[in-house]
Length: 454
Image (cartoon, rainbow, N blue to C red; front, side, top):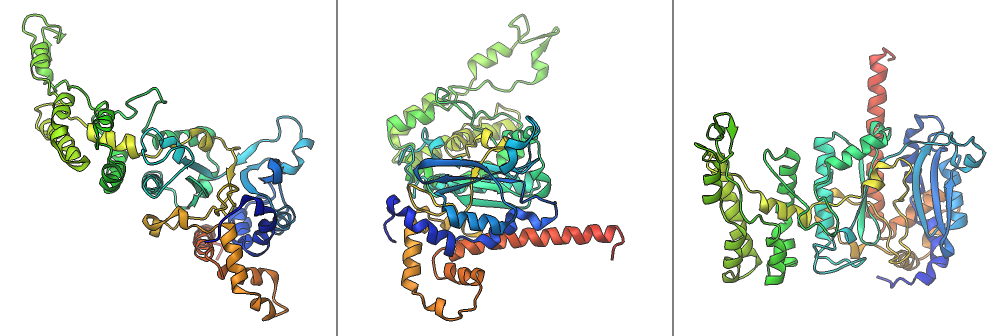
């Protein structure tokens, strides 16, 4: 792959927007079939130009006009905003307070830097194949919940180009959600709570919600290879003490209510009350025995089996009424692996998010859609850069341009991207748009039938 040099962007970006950017499918996506009048014209785009010149509230009469502007200005970055009450490029002419965001896709932004407290291989903007598994888990957990729990259908997952992933939920009804509804969805999808000063960020108790159980099942598939082998989270006293800090020292056992209700009092320690005796004498100890047993085990996998077995015994005992279930193993898995969402990105209808097929100005990688059927095989380091794509175009030669002098620009461009490693990613995007169009056509047909409009 050709080495990317940021200094080459002014020469490479015009080629990218002229010969490689999927303008056709992009316009079809954001036009949503033209069902709502002026929908595309009311959409905000923002461009980051050379020397960090930032231009907001751009809007265009048609996808073709947007295409021409992209080719004219060759932005270093494209951000997509909301659909507004008035055309964004005329916002200065609108009465104060009248210009308001009306709707937008529900978006999620998951960034690897938010996992710095639990990954040992990298930090800050750096990523590697080991910690990228966290992004795979995030997509699996959130996507399952979006479909099965929240009932959404059209999700576009995109690699950010550097260290994270974005999700665009494009269902018609979801695009109309209020900030309160969006915040509620993010709250439902969030389990890791607390800032840097909070040691234990996941706390579970019975009954455990089905969403949490399903999420644990997803995490568990990756946990051994990622956390125990790749990150070696129980490999040394320093690292296992961080995990043991999340394990309760002991657990108050479950006591039948009948034993607690003595002469109208609950566990006061008075005559006939047995609660305090049970609590003090028979509380299962957890952290201390594990601290003693861990050095005798060979590696992180063995130590985890010890911890997990201890927690599973508490849950089996609780099922027969002989104690309180402890979910500390689940809490550790979730704290180390569960998706970390930025609520502000998702709840704000007017919030901007980087567009698919933007070029990351620091890595040169393209923000490409993710194929969920091949998610486990996705390698961020194999994503094409703008340098490698332009080199591939050069290597393919100019034969195609001489094949048919009368060929239209869109057809020539379609052939251009197919000569490069961008082709499979564009196909994923086209399939997403086509599926939305099929669903929209089916819905229009259903409504027509209901109205007797045959």
